[in-house]
View 1 (tube, helix red, strand yellow):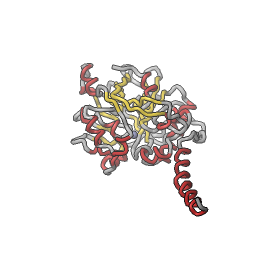
View 2 (cartoon, protein in one colour):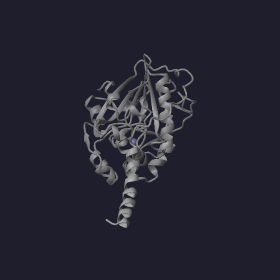
View 3 (tube, rainbow, N blue to C red):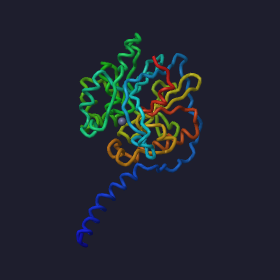
Length: 311
Ligand SMILES: [Zn+2]
């Protein structure tokens, strides 16, 4: 090999190697700086005695911890739950997300090719069928409260015809906007969307909130980033049992406990606004540090959901 050929090989090796090295580096652990301590007390809540929280698992995908958060091991294989949560409330029950619905195979088929090529899923009994089998009276259901409008969270919406779907205007616009990640939601005929506004004051470090029934039992806060209208749903049951349904702010609990965001490649593919995700992740990390009694429930963390009762 003469000197010129060697130089060409060196340039080629750098051109390929450096981007690959920086991509690999973006999966390494790099905890975000600790947020300032959260001020204030726990928000007051007076949940009715009849309230309850029920986990409706509808399927799973197989991923690794390395896929979910920076510093996770790729050898650490995990089952990502695809779930709905039913919140029973005397003024009307609420379904937080739907998980996989009856037409999940068709819905998956509408996702982009790169996503289908890298995703394996297993469907279980859809939430609607679980509720029907248990003799659940559909008229008890006030609405479906979406953490965000991605395929695995909305797939069951058509299984509840006529049930209002509650989203902030930002998420409604995201669905209408034409992007490939909302093709599934956009394809539903005749969804009764009900937009709500964040008309309440600050809540646990979030700048605004929406208290669904005015009793502090179900409070939604804006956590925009993963999608333009992503939210977190705080649920307080009698006996001061508190939960925070985080949607896809993080994919596994370590995202909060280790302040570990998604790797660069996953932020690019999955998040509308990575800076927004980071800001809200740190808000939740501050909540976790100050109020460890609040149970954090990332939408796909099977360990968090395992603690909730089933039908
Ligand atoms: Zn998502």
